[in-house]
Image 1 (cartoon, one colour):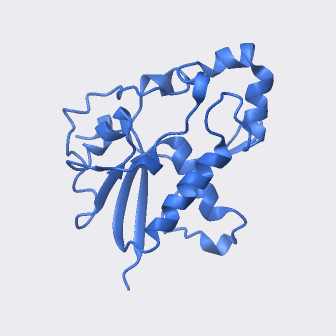
Image 2 (cartoon, one colour):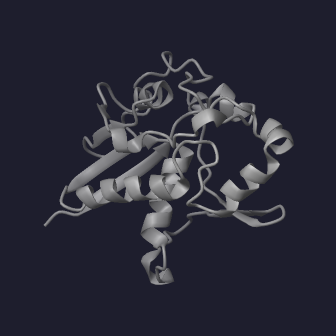
Length: 190
């Protein structure tokens, strides 16, 4: 039986990310049309290309292939009334709510989706892929990728983590340790 291979790719940069704002359905910051299909040969064969429904994921998917399949399970977390708001502004106006949301995955003070609800949604989608052999490339959001990692690693043994030769994992400490998955920006391509 052929294995299921899932490659999760975060969408390219948006102005909201640059300004540390909770996202809305904004476009990419880069000229993605000039780079359309520039990464279509990144993978061997022809993987199934899927993406979230937002403009930024659909535009990023166009770098990897044409006509990506839209998968609602890959949509970004619903940040409710925090959509479009800068994190710095919330630290001033809703500091307690923001802090509660950061430490309690079941909370949703923004009247949107909790991190726990997001993890359940993404986990259910991952379960459907278990009987889908082949390579799937999914263009999605940082929160969705985090939810997938948490679903896979929750309570897991370190033996479930493959570390390939010359691979790199970046950890940064600024008050707490954070894992950073480093990528390349599409505008760095020739």
